[in-house]
Length: 173
Image (cartoon, rainbow, N blue to C red; front, side, top):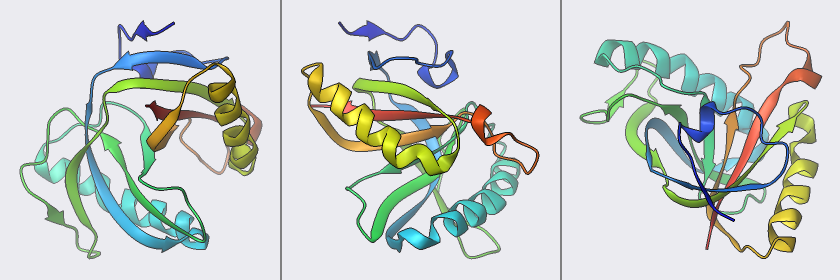
């Protein structure tokens, strides 16, 4: 059964089971990386968000949801992804931050998605993705690209890893 999301799906309560939703596209500002080593993902996130918040402020844009990473192909030893935030309106043109990072408008796709919340540390995401994709297939759905993670709980040094929430999302064919 497909539900229509009445409010932004990325602001809803945790999805305790695989849920299929029909969602609109979401305007974002992102840094895109291609063939970035998996071992450098934390550095990509850190540099993106260090550049993103000042750039949004300078452009008068407001974040309207949590951070995410959108993957445009299956990761291997490298990854192609966008890292960013949903925003209240598109960025008029790409902006290069002082750090040399280029930020541009993009969007999280609209359409039929499957979503579930992973509660726990980031090191459990690999197993969570495997269980999620298996559950999606067992429910008779076919995952499609792209897929994305929504980091509902902002990480901090004081954060209990067991209390962190990351929503796993895949577009459905």
